[in-house]
Structure formats: structure tokens, C-alpha cells
Length: 215
Image (cartoon, rainbow, N blue to C red):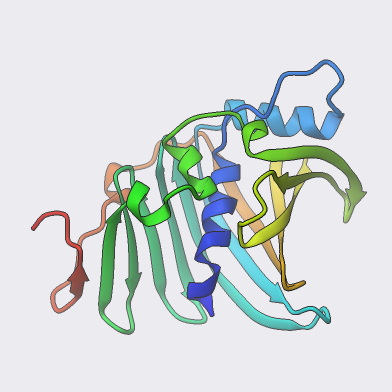
């Protein structure tokens, strides 16, 4: 099931390293704070908890792991539970590595993702070009912003971003089947210097690599 969530994760990562939402004197405080966060944060690393709920609100999956991002176009989303899996973008290629199966695949980011919203990581443009954005009020001690895709053929129909005093704390992604994916970030450190090899995939001995760009 983790594999079916990759498009959601790409969207979440996109939003966290996105560019300016829009400039407006009439924007709400929550939207202004999100816009400021996007404008000032160039890198971050931390941990995440990801929970998927079905249409009845029952938990169907829980996962944990580490995340790191570096503008532009580099991210590392590494599951540690329930089983190890790595999704990595090195600025040119998207890598997906399943440690248990000893399988990895690599595709150019534009080929792998086409017109998916994650392409904003490499083709910088305002989020307003792809989303309707509005204030969603407060809950759980956070201020929320709601984003609705302008193109409705995506796998999700609504994204909610919750902010605390330090920045983005939580995200909710709602799909067309009434399922909800909640991602909560912990121990996030922003504008940190990240080693380049953190975004470089090196296959271990015995790993079957499909689409190896070095070949």
C-alpha cells in the first residue's frame, strides 16, 4: 500500500518546498505565514508519521521514517517502518528503492512524474497556478490552509496544511475515495546544510537496478 501513496508524498514534498503562494494585502494570517515559510525555508530535515484512514475513519496503515529536502528538486523520503523503502530525487532522477526486494528503479523526474504537481520542484511557479488557496481556520492548536487542485484529474481533491509557530506541522491529503492521509512532522530543522551524498543513490551489491542512468 505504501507504493500507492507515492503521488501523495510527492505532493506533500512539493508543498513543503514550494515557492511563493501569492502576494496579497488581503491574505489571511495563516496564508501569509505559509507564504513566508515557503519563501524563507530552503532546506529541512526531520521525521514523519504517516497514517492512512479509510472512508469510515478507521486506520488502515501507519508508517514512520525520515525526511530531508533541499531546493531545488532534491528530497529524501525514507520509510523505516513498517518496512524499509526509499524515495529519493537527486535533482535529475527519481529513485525508488525497496530494500526487502533488493530492487531499485530510476527515471528522469520529468518522465516519471509528467505533469504531477511535484514538477514545481524543478519548474518553479507559484502554487496559485495549480491550486485554489483559502484559510481553513484553526483546529488541533494549528492554523490551517486549504488547497484545492485546479485540475481535477489528480488522485487527491483537497490538501490541508497545518502550521504552528515554527512552520508546517501537519498535512492532510484527501482522495476521491474518501480516504485521508495524515502526515505529521517532528523534530524539523530548517535551513540546515545537508551533505550532497544524502541525495545520491548508490546501489548496494546485489541490488537489481532498472533504468540505471549511469549505464
